[in-house]
Length: 176
Image (cartoon, rainbow, N blue to C red; front, side, top):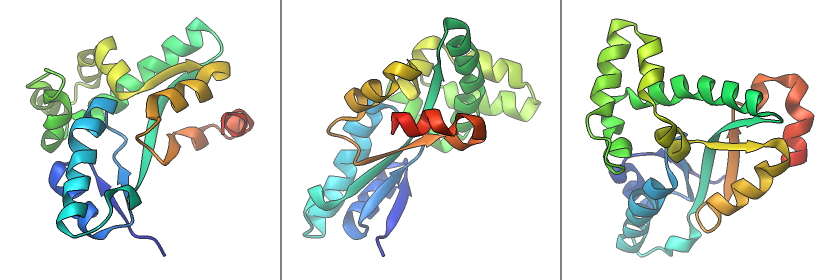
């Protein structure tokens, strides 16, 4: 049975590269973070252990805003703002913000979470941040957008939240 390690921090990816068959990336990631932090760390770990870095499978859960209309896409993006804010409020994940120049965001989100101010948490996540950490596309374009975004990075994608709407499973099946 393959062994996967969940990783968002560089030391986790390094360790996974040393011993695991693959990495299950955290849903709170950006393509830049994967390219500049997670994958190099995993490759360093594999090399240090005498393993072929290309043998490590990368699985990425992807947070998506998907719909058929601009209104549906806007609603889906607003829902994801809070999800990104929730993950981002974990201060140990600050590096995912810091890499993009958004230093201090994790600390702000953590303070807002402690205060119970969910609206302010969501409002902290700008459109630029949302675009870095999530995918927005129409149903017709989603498969192509995912392929383009994750080409050369991920071996497998998991659509985060796809099973939350059982009525929409056929649409997700079409994307797959």
